[in-house]
Image (cartoon, rainbow, N blue to C red):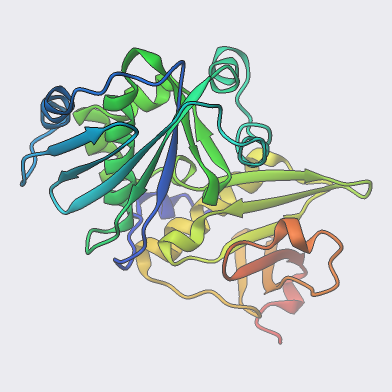
Length: 281
């Protein structure tokens, strides 16, 4: 199914002000050398403002460009409830999943907000995670987005070449979550964390849907909303192929899975409709 591929050229943008967070999974708490960490941050890509890293005991901060990130070290695994919403529901398998599950300590990174676009805030968190994690890195979690990334991906992301590519064509899956909820009636698909980009989260009931096609659909809608500053709302309709039509609606108040499907802010449900229902209330 060709899902309006031209949308993939869009760049995800957002209004400033929101403050994301990240959990960095580790083998053990590292011995953080502030001066070395600052040098490694500066070496990833040119910065407008030189990094300044402070760390004492189990608390510290990192400031570079317009970013101010608080650092808290915890000598224990990430909370089970957070693991359930990130690693447990992820599609990672093999070495990647094993790395995420085998950590013994973690750092909590909290962005202080400010005027930078949300994409740049997430990039700043990824770069800091790669630097502070070093050889002990076991991956990262983003609880608000119900998503995670194993260490190889974090290190790959924190390179100048990849950062340039991501800024030109943002892959939403790195910053937002795609979760499948299996029920007796079939599978629900849901995004998580799109509110950070001022886009609604999306859900769809798909007993006959292919997960890869639903993911592609969700990502293209996300890029359309963020790249074109478009507004989608309940009642809007969408054509995705010659004879494939969809309609946005509010998530029903009596949906038995609402507690799990509802995003942090606005959430819209996508349903398949007939051609005759296009543009009808």
